[in-house]
Image (cartoon, rainbow, N blue to C red; front, side, top):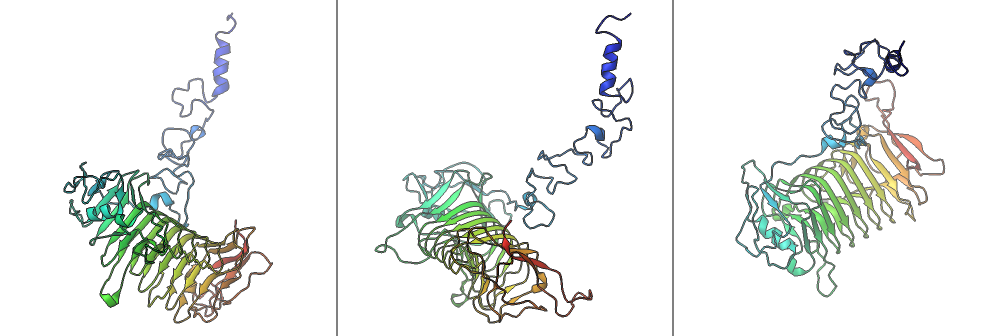
Length: 468
């Protein structure tokens, strides 16, 4: 006879946990019953015990989303953000810069040794005009850029700014902007994105001239192939531009940029803007731009500024006459593709998008145009200020949302001018947002271009109603 607490009682306890067999030595899930031993992903762990039964790597990036449904397995992204809704997570679409040619640490630009230089990633004072006043200034950085070269011969001079580096100007002696000295320069903030370029000048009327050169940040003038990545920029004064791409054919100045990526921009002054582009830019991606001043556009394009793609942007304006995207005085420029952009405006006469003469939007998808809860007056969602040869490629204007944040005065009209030519479209050019709430808005297909037997592409936009 067995003593209490021994023998058979212990064996029964084990069976109650796993009743696959008396001997669970070969069991692929010893803690739970799974007599069929199913192991769908063949990772050696039975489905009954496998948190990711269809993922043999078992959540390799550790973001608590199994690989079979994770939209980015290379990087942890538990939020699964996919702003452009292409099925690939934003974390996997971020631009990855090439290796640094130079690494600038806090205090390096202000070094007293003006002749010293840092190259190939080694640490030494780089000075190049430093005055030892305890700050890294615009002028010092501009002078340093003039000493750099493509040390690894990969075709681009990559200048990396260390976390915590603040490059600023507060007075005329510090400079009014940072002029990029030559082609193919890339400025990159290090991983934590705490490097900043800040124009803090707010000059009085007696000691300033209202021009963008005095109150700007990065100034790209008559150079090509410039890229900016992972930086924080700000402008405090009037008529400034955090990033300015000059392009003046009359003076034979032709500028261009390759990639503007992961920029966080704050702009406060009257008629100061986030990014002003007069020359072609290939890609504007993964940004957050916020302006508060009157006529404070987040992005303005002018004069042959063909922007190939704007993707995953959050653009917010608070001032009057401040569209988020202004496509002005264009002379042939176009916004080729706008995807996954979230726009909010609040001020009087501040449309989400303003188009000028000869502007074209070839594609606009998954764009949200929000009228802010702070709005005290109506505005056009999309305003066509000048109707000369301006057009939408309507079959590619789809899956957008035009909505109002509760509490504010909403959008008044979806499209602000009836004279715009729309390609193959039967669009109602001006539709007033009444009290009917949200409705689905078909952009239309007058000629049954896709041969589906109907005159409606079914490319829908939500018009009106509250933002979700």
